[in-house]
Length: 87
Length: 347
Image (cartoon, rainbow over all chains, first blue to last red; front, side, top):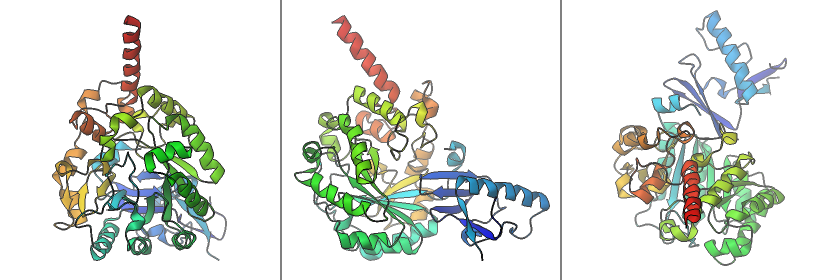
């Protein structure tokens, strides 16, 4: 969950790139990897800038948005994404 | 580690080991690349910077710099700056003797660098026997400078017969200095092959280390010890060899190999002077053979899921058989000790 007024972006210690199965996240602090079977749902560069928590790539269905919200929550919990003020 | 995705094949390595020069001011007896004099035809500055751009385009997350002593390359900080300007994370393995306050301050400003300082014992006597007179003290000075900076720093120790009993003391020493400890596996390549019998840890020492590691979750081992990984450390690292799947190696002259311990013509995947980084990663027959490698002789082992046959490089160097299974895996250590005990009882 994110605080009101906070956006989300990739943690500075993390990187992400597109792979055939979806996204591959790398966390330099472990180092550790996260393989996310997202297909083309989420562009790798999407969280390279601060995004609002209800902001999604264009063209997603409601079900895809729900799935993405759940995934983003997991990324926040695991530390690959972090909250950042957008004020 | 999700092996399924790794086996599907990644579009580029997650990280790259780049031995930027064979030049070294030390002559460590276990050196994997027998460093000393620079290699003939090492990559020029322009070639090195071009490689950084290629690696960036390929999407590689991190470059681990080694050698030789990387800081002996006059353009090394220029290469680092090119990496950091592209957002590539870097880790430098150094002997620490060329670090001073000014250099540490310059390195710290990037915020994308981590440094491993090599030390091979908790006492000057043990460390200097392997690395040379006075090196222990100089390394400690470098570590103190780094610990006072924002650079994530670790002591990197190669486990040998001589220092195996000092690993807990090294852990304490690292903590007292404000840095972490990383332990690497001794492999029989370079001068390590020449001094293998003298330096290799005994099976009993490897087992003891494995037990100690099980209770030392904050000690990093890179890809070194998955063949010895106990149940307690499962999930903390690899459970298979990552060569040509997650990582690869670039040598000083631009030749690419599966890993730093297999830098021989037999395992040359290509030359960056003939083909691009991406072409070699995608098309090398050597890399394809490593991706297809299955250590069938180990498949019946109860620990197969935890190591998948261990380190092919050690198998190659000791048994001349890349498919032979790691001769120093946990299971073989246990068997070796049991055999020795039976022999002793019989005698």
